[in-house]
Image 1 (cartoon, helix red, strand yellow):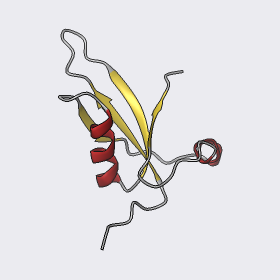
Image 2 (image 1 turned 60 degrees about the horizontal axis):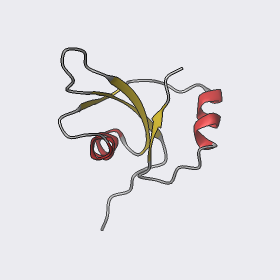
Image 3 (image 1 turned 45 degrees about the horizontal axis):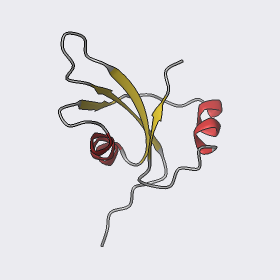
Length: 81
């Protein structure tokens, strides 16, 4: 039986292997933390690293992310402000 992705958002920070200045990006995944890492790493170039950001979403952020209409297992790059 397949494992469920869950119904909560996980924020993942990825870092490029760029030299001399690595690039950082923030991604959102509608998946459990361990699955979110795998899903985001599959979406970024090979050689990048990823880690889950321990963050508690505010009610406003939760609503904003829900408006993206992501399905379980989807990932979304959060544009820098």
